[in-house]
Image (cartoon, rainbow, N blue to C red; front, top):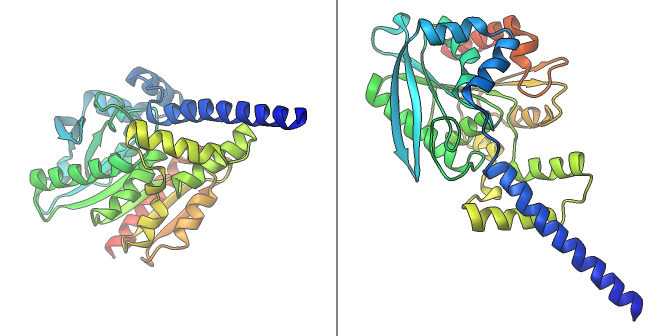
Length: 308
């Protein structure tokens, strides 16, 4: 009997610890640290993207905008491109990753600007200059992208060609937006394939704990406190249901989101023009850092193939 009571106490203590951990992990996602524009600017200057930052701050013609959607005010900018001066226009919407802001978009914006695209950058809800109670890792953010696509068409014309680019959470968001829109293409840099799978991988790799009961506890906390349904955020399901051409970029040494996530989604792409490129020795969101020239050339070739 004494041993039974002891085991019950241990089990109760373990479940209490897991419940506490579930709340903490959920907050790490939904109410994450928010790096400032200066933080991100400093990081990308050190990574060699000073030209893109300088062009944004001194040369590009920028028109700010705000959109209200589902409890958040989305703050962004349309960057006009002299090379895209006549209709039909072509534009790309860039989605940044978790914890950062629009400054993380600039290195990619410069590539599309050189390709003649009008560029739309924005702060995802909760981050940067946008408002919002929390981040939902793509659930609400993908609907925000759909709203920005609609806004872009009102600005540039219904016949405007619109592409999407995203990094990390932004890539998952861009892919999830395929549930609501049909862009000309998507460039997805280091996306996760499924948020529940990502959660299980993180708990196993970084906490060295079993997924149960943490995962169902996190799912319950996320749903009740933040309206975030972990099971609903599944980029791979969106990819399976779309025929949009997708270019996956992923570092082979990614320690946060394994490149197998992109490989699994590339395997189920329905459009034969879809591509996947892996970058040796690149950690998370560092493919463009380790090979900026190759990144631009591959993206350019992919987009040319889309239009062929």
